Image (tube, rainbow, N blue to C red; front, side, top):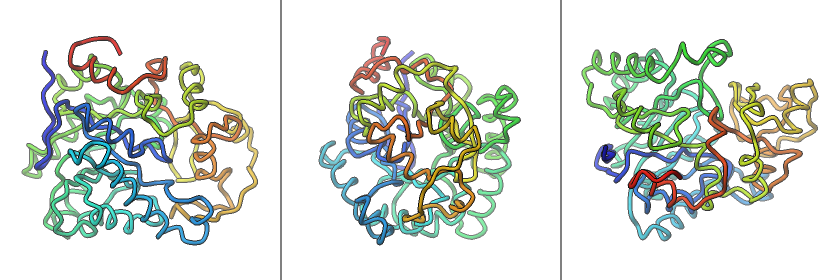
Length: 353
């Protein structure tokens, strides 16, 4: 079958693929621009930007400055093509500032999760930007739709539905994560579609996220009724991603047995690879750290076992001992470092990437 384009608001991509906004400096301008050029929705992760030292004293302004620079660089890399957007976590202490900066800097779309993005329409205002919330249940979507309708008379331009098999932070209980079949993409699609129909907006595009890494996975999601997919883990080891080569090799060498779920300082379960840092956390050890950034509203540095910003910066640098390697369940799909064009050729021609 020929894969259909993905249409959201006034945006369209050749392939029904959104690149996940993988923070801290993984989903950077280069990866986002490459995704746009290859025919997908390219997404810049807004968390963990800025000069590390300057961020300790001027976190908000430094984050805004670097986000603006990343969007500008991505536009240059992809010759001002679209769709190019930003991912913003609700849990960020500078969430409002990030959204407003994304508007000023000319993002085409904003994806927002790690909490319900209730105030997102307020921060976007009248700007012609697609707003795409991330949800993990029909109930969460219903709450969001009702709030947006009541407060802003606004509806989402698309919905990303994350399953318990996603990488990174998860909006599920530990029991649901242990039994992902009870909250499968198929079950979640029916829930979300029922909510959209009852709300009088059945045609809003619905995007699947969770264990999607190939053309076959995409075709399965489309057959379920989804309009497109979001892909993270598979893109981590693309040559264009922002990770150090040493960290990419960690993902390439990992096996499904290396994947575990721990509690994140964000306050949510997070799926990661079992590395020395994670083993120390699982043993009950508390890492020594200060809290110079105050980057998360939901983090209590006095109780958190480790600093997630520090750990993700270590991953970016290639520091295996102290890094946090977020991953989906489908780590076996990551078996080599490759140019992103290889993946998109597999969508075009059915070639195995």
